[in-house]
Length: 141
Image (tube, rainbow, N blue to C red; front, side, top):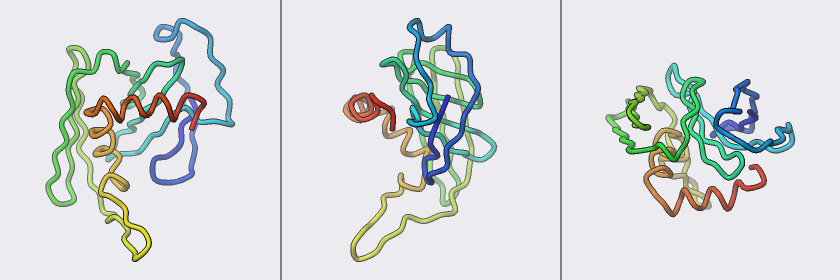
């Protein structure tokens, strides 16, 4: 699995067996990442699209979006908590954000530009933003 870092141009390859989740064959190249990832505290989270299916990565566990039920994101100063429910399983990630969004007279970042957990919450909570990913990521990112 080839993913791009959410806040930098760094790319990583994660070795995962996706054959039980994806019935058709797919080609993984190192030319086009299929999604994004970020290190949040001691956790690695990601979001990727393969074979027209959306998946979340949580510490090496692949969660199919079709089993997604709810997501919660809490901000308390620099401290963050992301909780997700896929099927009957709950996933929790506690982390800290120390970077503030950049703002200049020509450009301003939103908080989610430096907080992957918040971005993931906002995308998975919005049918419109989720559908946008299918359009934008169809050929890789």
